[in-house]
Image 1 (cartoon, rainbow, N blue to C red):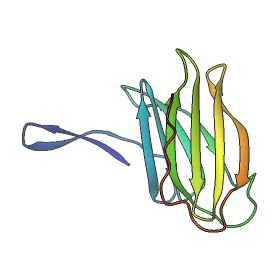
Image 2 (cartoon, rainbow, N blue to C red; image 1 turned 90 degrees about the vertical axis):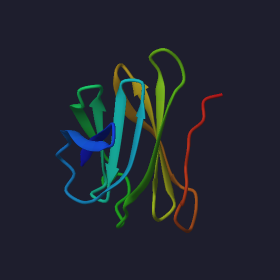
Image 3 (tube, rainbow, N blue to C red; image 1 turned 180 degrees about the vertical axis):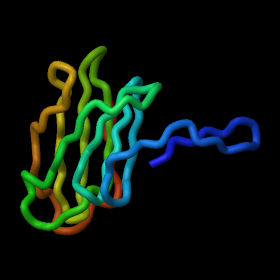
Image 4 (spheres, rainbow, N blue to C red; image 1 turned 60 degrees about the horizontal axis):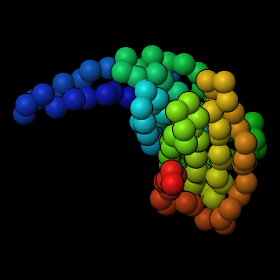
Length: 124
């Protein structure tokens, strides 16, 4: 995955993020946290602005059937607290909560019999 920036009328690659084994399907960036998800069922967390890789979370240990990750949404709920939501193409919703600087899984359930086609966490 590449992070590109328009400088005037020119598009320049600023950083290449390695690590996903399959196609990246969603990205969200709030404050100094960048989250990417992929068809490889991996959630990768980076610290910005340098895109420093911090750690990965996996959904394949929770959902044993085939699935891909479709949407990620990150919301800060306070100065140092955040929630990350991730959906799958087969109707699962994952909620991760930021605990001591690391996202920990708090919720994983099938909430739809079909795919979830849009998703956003809203603080408020």
